[in-house]
Length: 361
Image (cartoon, rainbow, N blue to C red; front, side, top):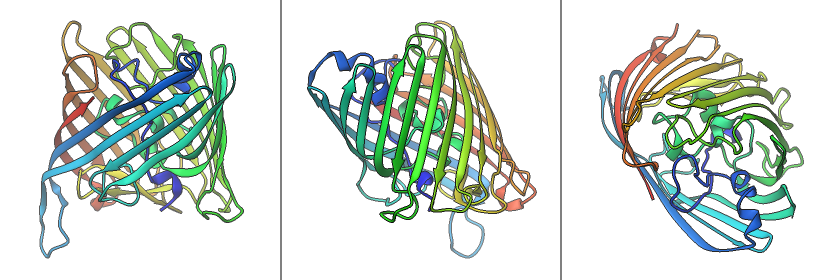
């Protein structure tokens, strides 16, 4: 598997509202750097789902075995602590091999493990195993998604690797730049990443999808670059934007993959949703997605719709509709979701109905 396809978990702790979620070191940079010491913090996330589709063969046994059952998407424990300018973040995760954020599942595995150091006011560095910042959708914690699944682009780049990343903010600009081992492991070719985000509206980063818990208008635009130098054509350029105002939320993203990185689409036999696989010719060259959400005023109900064009050799596209019932201001929610994929390849076409329960503490 390509390194970016492995998975994500933004290490964060506490019991905040969705908007104040401690989902990244960048988020903490503006508040927690002022507090030189904080004791160990712990939080957990669990997400389960049931999925049904007559278009997905869920078993390798002879004959058609329609998808119709339940899976554990993720069970995660996250730990963080800070002493002076130094911090540490560790997360352990288990879940089904098709939908968890690890490359090793099933079983309990290390997802994130890195230390951090505050270089100066507004700048820090982390070293260890983490998800590099490229597109914003890859770095949003599962507890803060508006659907049960990330976008195709976001899922393809939410992987784990070991390396070093510098990050910080100045004014309304947030930036990241780093290097990880890449596909060739400890060999001498590195995977480089860089990202810059500009906050047009809002004083803090919008680390979520949807409008739950956002007390003010928020709008950011970003551009990212990734290059695995072990490949002849292993670079990716991406642009994205996130917006929330009142009950409305919206996001859009586009990524231009090099030939060696273009992810191939496949239907997950666990979730019934299109998921990215190995990169190569015929994969998604310049996929894009648009998401719109609406939170009904004074109620716990939020609806959302997403359209994705994979721009692959099979002209594949995906429409997702979702309804969330939020239990309080935090991440706990019920979700009903419908996915409809179309393609020139019959094995990529499917209608899937799913419901899920996400519980975060």
